Length: 104
Image 1 (cartoon, rainbow, N blue to C red):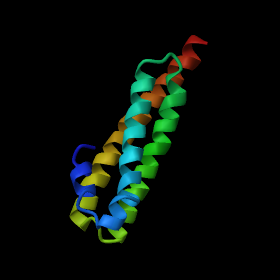
Image 2 (cartoon, helix red, strand yellow; image 1 turned 120 degrees about the vertical axis):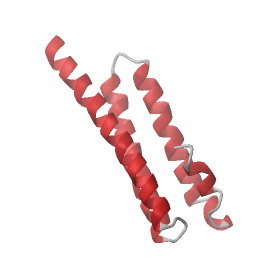
Image 3 (cartoon, helix red, strand yellow; image 1 turned 90 degrees about the horizontal axis):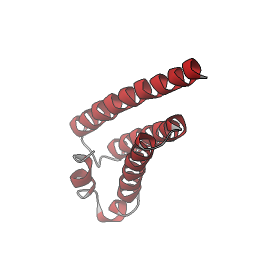
């Protein structure tokens, strides 16, 4: 995620404050949801919302590549990172849902 912020600052000025700001906001929302999930008993709710945010982030990154604000190589790097995060998030969500079934 940290890699993404300097890239957004390289977007054209008119898009830095539209698409770039949306990418930053989505990334921060994702992080907040992960923190909330970590400190809450009802983790599944926050993890599902975080899953939506990470998918939105991937779409915004793809859109940035299509508009040529990111190179194919930059997009590949970001997409791989987001995919890894998404896989970890999915594993955590499955674990939490399994835990709910076992203990209820």
